[in-house]
Image (cartoon, rainbow over the protein chains, first blue to last red):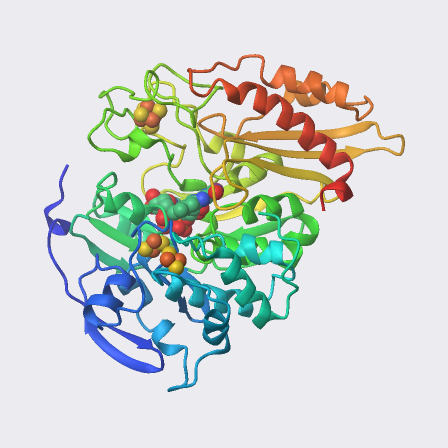
Length: 170
Length: 332
Ligand SMILES: Cc1cc2nc3c(=O)[nH]c(=O)nc-3n(C[C@H](O)[C@H](O)[C@H](O)COP(=O)(O)OP(=O)(O)OC[C@H]3O[C@@H](n4cnc5c(N)ncnc54)[C@H](O)[C@@H]3O)c2cc1C
Ligand code: SF4
Ligand code: FES
Ligand code: FES
């Protein structure tokens, strides 16, 4: 049985998101993903839409300090949250050490996965669970790189984390 | 995705009440399965009730020595929880083998055991699927069925339940605590997921409007000899083709005092067979005995073509997981 009350009665609630330290108030329909809110409503297009199904990691951002897939959550569910996207990693012209390491190690080719790789690796560093290359590989497996720059991505992450870049298992 | 309305419940009664207002409502927790299915129009709720802030974000010890996992705690926070790591390492291992770090940061304990099958036809609205559309037929039985079930299937559905966490919970005899319009009840893991029979649209025995509030683990007894062996196409970030949660209690002579073996990737629910476990009691923990138990566990297994390999794969995985459980150090 269809209940009229709830069918196609669009609400357009107002939410607030603090993105890279800046507070934004925006109107979003309830079905808008956090990813679409960032890209389409706030024009922060650094965060990429690869699969839109939680499979590739290109949309990885930090929400309240934790890395998540922005495509698999609704913006409205994140009302009041603090979000860091790739645009928020550098301090002005000063790159985040991980960004510099990605350049030094040639850790990208097309660059499409890179914003997600960077945010994911920062989440990884904050979690503090990876102590070996094999653990870095396992805990970064949610970020697919179609260009297969994996060995250079791992080298960059290991350098910044002070992990020996040897003996991986995957 | 279809148009929806949304509300954020403030406590469990509020959540149930919101959910009861329409039969097109759906609870949303991490969203990692529901939103995925909504984007492909397989699930089309009209109203979402957000249950992340209804007070089930705790992990606490019970008076009987058990542990209660709040339904809203994320899979990451649960798997890395110190008490879980120490006393329920089988569960931690299974949970950390699932999905990716990002997804585990969102996925919740309630949502995990509620997640739906990854059957390709279930996801493809252009094909027949009894689970998605009762009565339309099953495209997998005579279709491509490499990932499908070998145990407990029916003529209407051969899907598998994809959760790793649920397999470990089944091996550990966990209990699912739920609350609904008519009050609270507890469902043992054994009775939580269903076999497909002639109602494959029903994954589990949760009643209308009921919400999972927590999952109860009995006092730990398998913290020493355990293994979660997950076999898949990639060593990380892939669903299981076959998985085994194995747990043993051994005496000083390495004879089996207690055994628990649950299989994933092979059935519509985590698969256990008490008779096969009983076969091991009092016997030496040897590969030959493990093989006997494996044979019994798989005695009714049936392949559907592309998944025939799972029968032998499961047999070997059971033996290997039990061997790893005996000598846990060997797998570290
Ligand atoms: C790319 C990818 C790979 C994955 N790999 C794995 C894997 O290897 N192993 C594995 O086990 N899982 C895997 N998963 C699945 C993942 O673990 C589940 O999506 C997740 O656990 C679901 O939890 P959630 O909180 O996000 O649920 P949601 O998506 O919020 O909800 C799922 C369902 O449960 C219902 N629900 C949620 N909470 C409750 C509650 N408390 N009471 C009643 N109903 C509730 C919802 O209504 C919905 O129907 C993978 C997912 C993706 C996208
Ligand atoms: S196996 Fe089950 S889920 Fe898959 S097509 Fe058949 S009925 Fe649908
Ligand atoms: S776009 Fe979110 S995981 Fe691929
Ligand atoms: S650099 Fe091209 S996808 Fe990773």
